[in-house]
Image (cartoon, rainbow, N blue to C red):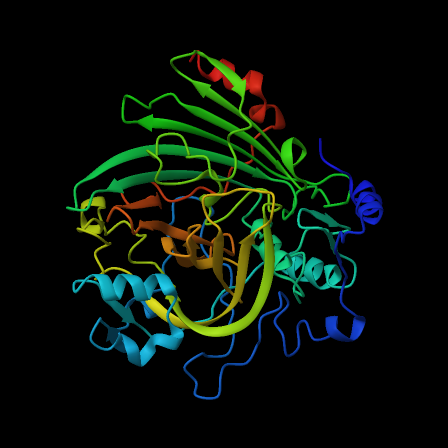
Length: 451
């Protein structure tokens, strides 16, 4: 059972412990939003050298369905320079630990760095709600936002947990259907492909009857996935109701197994349990780079820094690239990713005493313009770099949102890597859909199994 925030405060007081409440910012601080800060909290200006440009938001364009993200002017550019093992020391201060590990491990790994573009934009109602949230939204502990409505929760963050909440509830439209193809790539470059269709309704950051996040409630999405291939996995279905809070009150999940022919509650759809069908290469809380409960970690905000990260990933996530074009031994085909210099928030999550997780430390590099994690370093209990996640960040102009296409997880102990969120050979994400609420009920999923 989850402690309500009021109970948490009483319980902490009785034991002489702290149950942190992260305060809203002052009116003077909030007044910066839309001025020297963008409406969602990024620095509007570029850097002194011009290598990070000022924010130049792109307008909404295109239909909500049938279109891959693209920008002809950006896509026609050539790299400014390439980082390799030979010259990586020159750029070391701007590289994640994961990129340093890949560069130092493989002669074939390189990073093509392009001119930076800051074109991310969101709808006006998200801007308005975000500015209002700055002076009203609070975070109790790590998992209970209070008095937050529709927009980014903490545009001027004071803690690491606040930064992560901005990512978790970022605007992604009212609903979506995603053709999520995945592959496990062996050390020799061979791969096996899994095809999944995912469907989502968003309830918080949405234009349609938004649900606020409060200390007593806070549903922000409902998710359904069905595995289409390979045959041994086909028919597997997962249902998730994602809410603020921890334990069963933070996430309700169900799993349908074709072997059992019934749907059942699945508390294991959480945290560092392997996602069905990934052969242990992706944990549930690595979907969308990070999701789910946060109370297993202490979250520290280390500050903001200019880093070279994957960005404007139109080519690697587009229809001209086939799955076989992506897979190479040990790492992706590095002709395809685009890297740019951007300012990122750096958040470090350390395992909380008395809890457990495969990762004892995670370091997040979160884009200031979109609040999306472009990269994550994951460390084991001995302090070694165990995994590295890349989110090939792309602005989606038809819905005015940001995601990763694809997302990659490198496993340094085996030489294998996992690629997810690929739609290259399927269809682009469909943001025109909105499903009836009953579509996301366990009984409805059970009925789907009979079709």
